[in-house]
Length: 213
Image 1 (cartoon, one colour):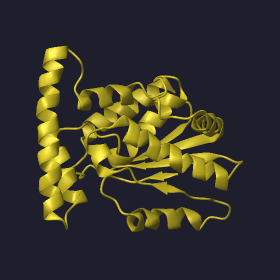
Image 2 (cartoon, rainbow, N blue to C red):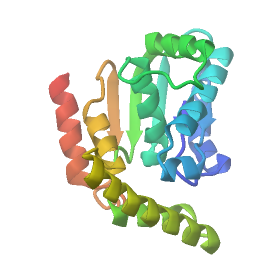
Image 3 (cartoon, one colour):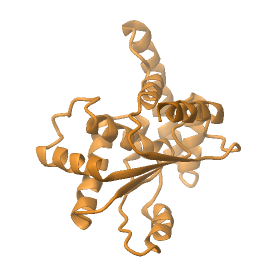
């Protein structure tokens, strides 16, 4: 299963899908979350994106090992929520069906590897703005719209956090990444010249996962 980055198109992710498909016996499936769900960190939409893809993947390939490849935070948001639900760290939302939970349980039993491609990244305002520029480089209207929504959401999220004592969305996401259940092999692919990724934070996360085994 390949989970695309925010703003990716099917043709973009298909390049990597084709790379995997060249190996005999590998069945691939891709999913790309709605950019609004990614930007607003809307759990229900992100979960359903991943669950629909897993249902299709399990239908196409009812037996054998499963590997998940996430691209940037846009893909990792989806997989993080699925993993948390899979391991009972979060309660199922009302929209999640019994059939979807059964599928997730099967995936858990067959999962042999996770590939994190430029993820997880701590969500700074500056990196979020850069991610929007990269994702919608050819659509100025979308860039303005998403930047406005992103900054507004961040501002009100910070106010709500101060008033309620709850974590902001970036802090909540990062704490959930640190709490990632390490039950399978993990591979991290990243670059120290990636402007969207805080490499020091990522390498600290990798070291923590290694310490957990």
